[in-house]
Length: 71
Image (cartoon, rainbow, N blue to C red; front, side, top):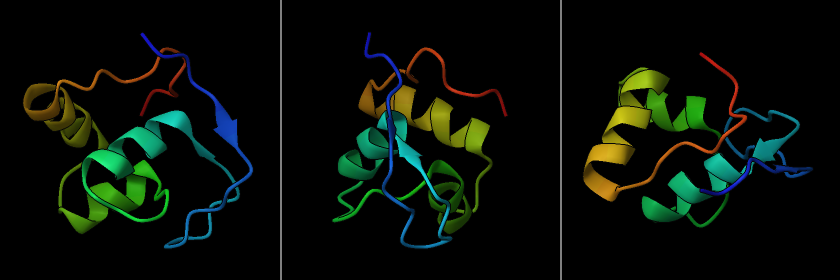
């Protein structure tokens, strides 16, 4: 299972100062050109971050990275 890594890449939507490897994985799975943070993706799809994590696991087989902050 991948370990959580932090990047000094800001979210292009909300401007959060850092994104992480989970943000990168879900952004790629959904076809985003840039790394967008989990909160912005959840907001776009009108779901909670918890629901987004469940959906990514159920439909894409992506498990959240260990060390991901609890919501």
